[in-house]
Image (cartoon, rainbow, N blue to C red):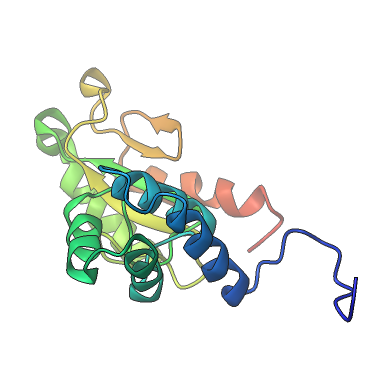
Length: 171
């Protein structure tokens, strides 16, 4: 085994993650239409797609960095910034907007000191808006991960968010 006494196969150093992404992408070199699939896998490995990861993918696939970057920035699923442990999505579809969705957005921004599309400093939450989450009859609605909260009002938000800190014994 040589000098390497590290037997764990799950090396999470940045160098190891980039190497793994490069190897994975190289397996798809020359395969038409594989870029999006490689980006999905890379984001799963690294957590997000900063420029450094995009360069590794472009080199491994032998495609221009501009093409990789264009795809990453075009599709909303891809993120170039670190994501939070939980994703908050406030619905701003017509029913939710009319019934106070904008007030929910403003209150979350105040409570978490975060803007839409950003992640909190503690990396607990990533904050997004959605055009519709399919809960129009329960407006205004929001979701945190897969949990939908109905008829939310700004006064309920602190209590909702506290649950996510309490679950892990924080705060």
